[in-house]
Length: 139
Image 1 (cartoon, helix red, strand yellow):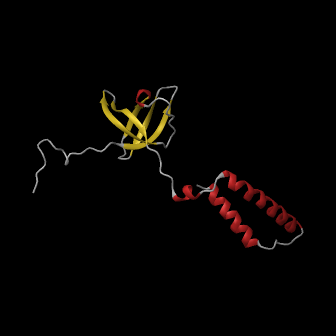
Image 2 (cartoon, rainbow, N blue to C red; image 1 turned 135 degrees about the horizontal axis):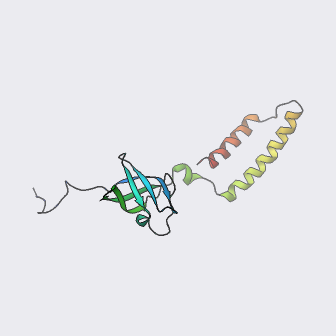
């Protein structure tokens, strides 16, 4: 059985802290991160990479250092969210435009039927089409 080489630190491997931006004000030059472990970390503008815009809820990983006022982020990187299956299956805007135009015509006819005091034929089909379109918007 092999033993780890002298100085290996497999047991003490450190994980980079992650969390969400609680708020960040570019004009004031600071904000706070709410860590996944529940800690709140000061976020100075100097820790934010150039060109990165932070919004509340942005997932980040960060390095932490101790300052006289407590923990502060020393460096930060945004964690890119993986696309969900729903987002991957989402139709392109070019595909949705004709569907919306067709639905407008169908709903216009349905409105005229309702004004005459009758429900339109194919109500379940209309409802199914509306739900399908809503699913494309609700990603």
